[in-house]
Image (cartoon, rainbow, N blue to C red; front, top):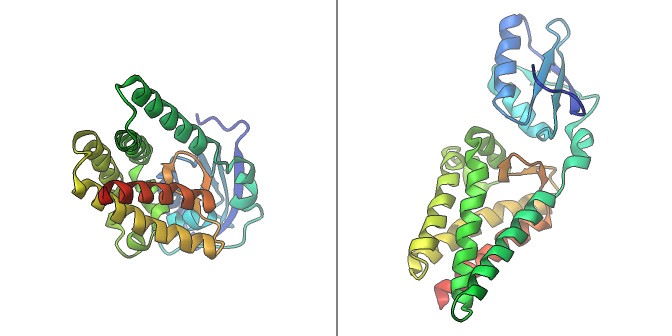
Length: 242
């Protein structure tokens, strides 16, 4: 039995349900996102209740339901924005960033001579490996969330499925080929494309779930995400130019 104590919940109205087969299809689609822990659907009136510790944004839920068939989502009595607002925090992102920063600085301090170039390579290796790990935990859910704001993934959905492995590859490259200009150039291009989508979403003030840590954490898209991508882009350019 799924644990539902102290979970957030979202109420939806789904049109187009005609039988229990419809209910099963929608439930299967919704459960593909691991953030959704319990789904209850009334076949007669289409009323649905979703529960989870950190529910996805309404756009993501709507896409999941519509992917199951010819169904549409109506008005909500309790939107994901309201039910998950208190959980939409940058705390996990900040903790991971500080952990990586502290660990890589300690490694560099313990080495013979402090080299900024070497520290940046170690930091970026850790960044890409850790962030790709959280994305790989649920690649389909990440790809769906990533499509909602990334320019390339929106036009080529397959890119969302490949992106976690691109990050993992960059992490390995910074460990093995930290002085290779190709590593820095590829990183700069990848981060620039990602940054464009983030900037567009923030400028439009879109309420979108940031997928930088996959869908394990419910992070809001904002200027913090721009800073994160911007720093990685700047580091890559500095190392490439040097």
